[in-house]
Length: 119
Image (cartoon, rainbow, N blue to C red):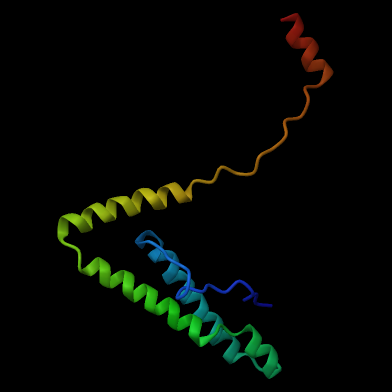
């Protein structure tokens, strides 16, 4: 089952920066693949297919956002573009770091506490 309950609304309130361009492109590709897979599946009720298929409006919004970002990048001079590329690298590297989930340390065993006390 494909979950499209958290659709991305980009026109009204969502703003992004250029460092998200690869993520937006991957998201668009995923929407298009999902649409094609659902179109190819047989034996699915029309209502179920319509509910699971990404909306054409959403695909259009993502395409417009990607086009706008690429256009803005194309308008930059070489030195500004290089500075933006450096900043993108730093931002994406920072986002890739995973701190993991916090964990509760287990209490030391009685044997370990005794060993530390005699040492």
